[in-house]
Length: 178
Image 1 (cartoon, one colour):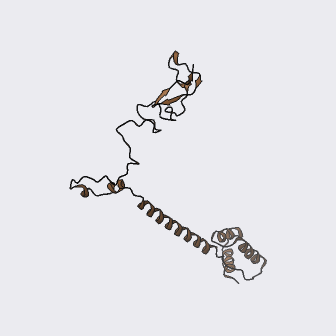
Image 2 (cartoon, one colour):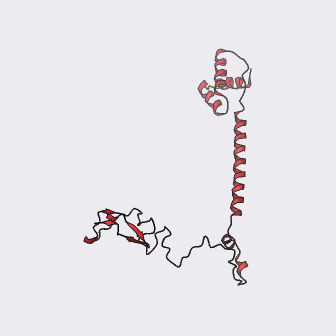
Image 3 (tube, one colour):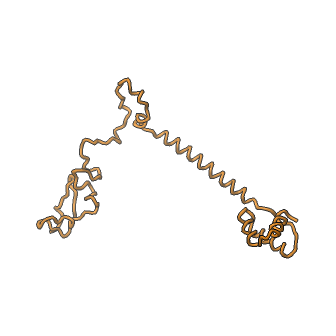
């Protein structure tokens, strides 16, 4: 008699029914077909040897272990890439204040101007609607969907269609129709 069969018989003696036992065993890694077969054999009185648990739990652990390794290796690769992409600005941000206490001017020669932003002037033409601009390139207004018909603030600007333009960050109504 198998250990599984003995366990099932002991549980049946305690008053558990077949469906309760099946649910418990399947939830704990036993194959449903194997459990059904043992339950049937017990109810018929046949006591053949039945294979125990399948190796599904071992495969599950192997799969989980593999995923953990992949995540760890991927995370390490990402971290190394992020470290190698630090810019001179990051180095200044991460420097200690004691590094700058000797009042030595910072050497800006290694800082590239390709990503610098001039905040002192209006940046008309950068595709961003900023203070003082009616529009900027393809951005024709706050809702980015402004059309000629939206501008009807007096009787002379009663536009019925046309093509609203943006010139020097100001609306150009020359192609709008009255």
